[in-house]
Amino acid sequence: MIEDPSLEGVAERIGFEESSKLGRRPGGPVRIVMARVTYKVTPEGEPPRFVTAALPKEIMASGLLAPSLVAHILTKKFRFGMPFTRLVQELASEGIRCDDSTMCRYAEHVGATLGCIVDACAKEARETAFCLSTDATGIKIQPSRHPEGKRQACARGHFFVVLADRDHVFFDYQESSGHRSRRSNGTNVGNLPPVRSLTSFSVGHRHVFERVRQVRGPVANAFGYALRQRAALCRFLDDGRLRLENNASERALRVLAVGRKAWMFCGSGVHAQAAANLFSLLASCMLHDLDP
Image 1 (cartoon, rainbow, N blue to C red):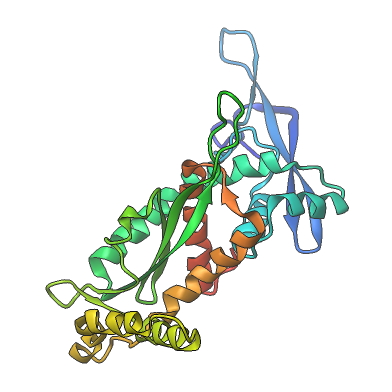
Image 2 (cartoon, rainbow, N blue to C red):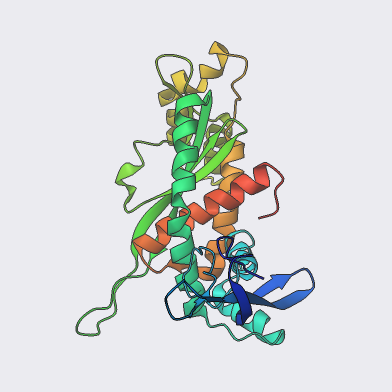
């Protein structure tokens, strides 16, 4: 029940104005009814008027889905990799009709709105973290519709992940691979002035192992990587807190790599950045043992 504190005890209650949203709780869906109190207000010397308590602020104004169901849908996709088309089928088995285009709109709107939280986490991480572990993976972006109806190839982009100590995990989307040189696979050491790069021994090991396993592969290239990255590979000798490998950031990307096999591409660059924000919040929830 939603009341208006300024009118309670002052104006006469004459009824309720009800609306409902579709929510979720453990065990299945639930219908959430919001009953807003309607008051009869009679100012002195004026005719009576009727005032209904205002709805609380919502991320998605006039939406049909309650926050609990929105959280369920977004967690299913961005944590467990279930595409919206299969989510439509799952909800239909529970008697809920919600199409994938509605889910897409919620994902883009909620992800963009919550971006301010991710930006704040990223700002604090860059200012206070001792070590920023980074990695990247590619992503396909659905092309815009051609005016003549011709088929077009998907555009390419990249998701970057950054782990700031054990406090924050945040993802960032970049439209092209041209930014890869700015954020190499490895670690940026923040509080060892000046900022220096640390490269993962695991990456170097994989380079060598894969080349040796492929008998005709260029083994020299694998050892060349190790020689070129020698200074970064030895950076852990400067401080005992630094790790020899970058496996944590690679594990953080796994959820995206697994999901990408199911949903294949993002609808647009805007949707990709919104998805990055949702990946960030879900990964941070997992980091701190919170139920998203």
